[in-house]
Image 1 (cartoon, rainbow, N blue to C red):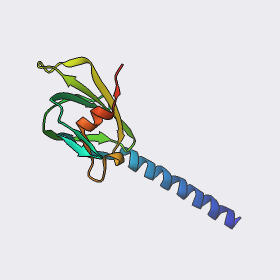
Image 2: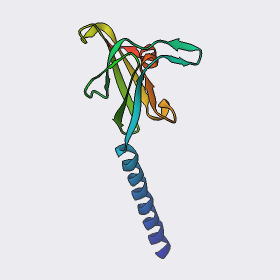
Image 3: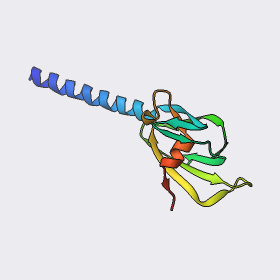
Length: 127
């Protein structure tokens, strides 16, 4: 009876530790940098986008012009979606020029930087 009680108590502790880690990991807020500068890596060279609006996880949109850089907060460690809308001269989204890029904080690198030209080139068109 004593061994059985020890096993049950150990199982309860492991389950509670697993729940605590899950809550910590998914509730943590991560900062990352949004960069609209020229992209040069992996044999690709992409120029900065003239004017774009970025929305992360259906949040409020931020406008970025060429060579802009800003810090943004993404909640959680799971997958995030970035909607990138190309803007006209009046800062209105151009119809048919929007793309969605899916990313995780870990996929952005050791210092998390989301490069907008790279994300726009590798994103999927919005229907």
